Structure formats: structure tokens, C-alpha cells
Image (cartoon, rainbow, N blue to C red; front, side, top):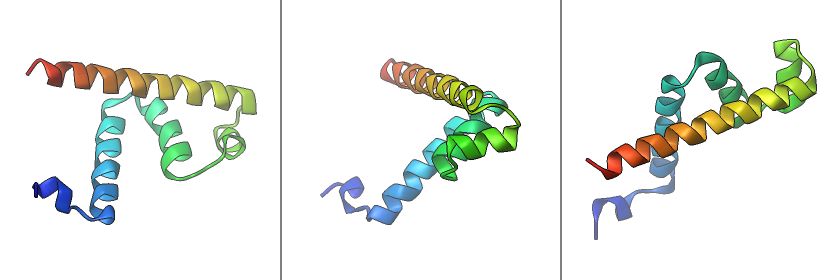
Amino acid sequence: MAESEDLEDADLIRLFQDLALTLLDLMDPDDADILARFELRGETVSEVAIQLRCSKAQASCRLSHAQSQLYQLVVLTLSQAKFE
């Protein structure tokens, strides 16, 4: 059995969290902040809007943009890894 197959659920969760934090560190700080608020801290779009002092629509737009930037970063990272 391969080592990765022996991982416990808690270990996998920790690995994914570490990966997410690494990717957030590579992103624009504003995009990373809104993603962390929504995805990691579980804040709602309404809560994020209040904290950022913007409309719910603006917070939603910013979140969508940040998610798109993360997606592009993941694709770029995987594309580079494929050629190494």
C-alpha cells in the first residue's frame, strides 16, 4: 500500500489546508483576503460586505474575481508541474 493511501482524513484535511494557504500566499493580498474570509472562515457574502464596507453585490463580484484568480493560479501551477 502506498504511503498516500495510509493517510487519515485529518491528515488529508491538513494537507488541503496547507495547499490552500500556500496558494493564497501567491495571490494578490486583496483577492486572498476575500477568499480566506469566505472559504476558510465561513463568512457569508453579507458579512464580508459589511466588513469591507461595500455593497453585497460588490462583495460578490470581488469574491467571484478572487475565485477566478485562484482557478487561474491552480491551472498555471498544474500546467507547469506537468512539464517538469
